[in-house]
Length: 387
Image (cartoon, rainbow, N blue to C red; front, side, top):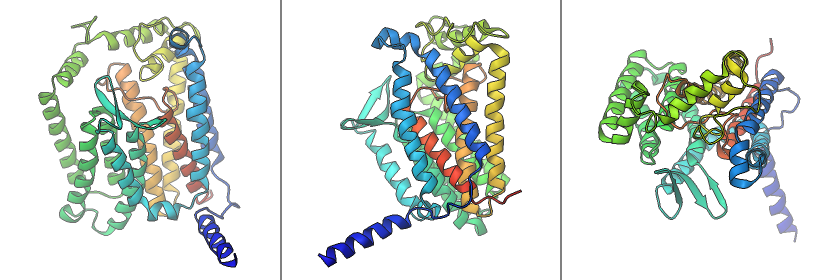
């Protein structure tokens, strides 16, 4: 019995060591407050954008809001609280393990017994009653691992063979798995996260330029070898060529945005959400927001997002520890680039890629990981140099 008590005590001690004991320093409450504001804005917009589909498919106008709250916000807050308290040194020490595990999950998606294929893409992993997108988790674990890798290679970061080639190999492995799903949009975001972190860590500009050139060539080859990608590019360049076919989605999105005018039709009064605009509560939610609130209010919300990302990036500059600073850079780059790609696609500046808008689009996996990331940034903010 005493031996069992000793084992239990030792186990509890190990668990206790995982969590940060530094409770005296406060997190950055401004960042926390802005995160809550953006989340609330997202829930309000989602409530309106999803009401028509919810009523038609589930006889409940609040169906998607309820799902987002129960499976996204609630679990996300638990994840955020966990990462707010768990020691950053633990995440750093086992970052490679977490990264490899997420890659294994990404591979399982490609196996028919585990992967769920929707609209020709295998992006969902089904493990019993649990269904989620490993690509969202891989972005998070990749940031943790790459931050540790870049810190370890700081002395040779400008060397071609010692750092740049291994960096390219790491990125290529994940990009290859994402392209097998296929998911070009997420692959693009992933590459942008990697390049942003590599640049901030001091990577040589010629190497970054070479990587960018390689990326352009790779995209060209992907388009040449996949007719649907070529069709998507053609639609982007000339959306009026097939308005009832390939160009339908972007034309409906532009119609929604244009219909909003300066001040919008009013919250809840979108017409495009009534089965006209595909993915009105998901990837196309920005178009519904612009239609209902108009150019002025939508611009204010977009500027709030921009300020939020700039503020978070500035937090990283006030962190003494390089690993922690790069973690913030990676997480902010993820949320920022994803927002740019989503909004850019809706306004016709980028091809449609099926990328959700963080905090706003419907999707429990994405929201859970987003909120968990916020918890980690808040934990790191407790170590900031006070002004």
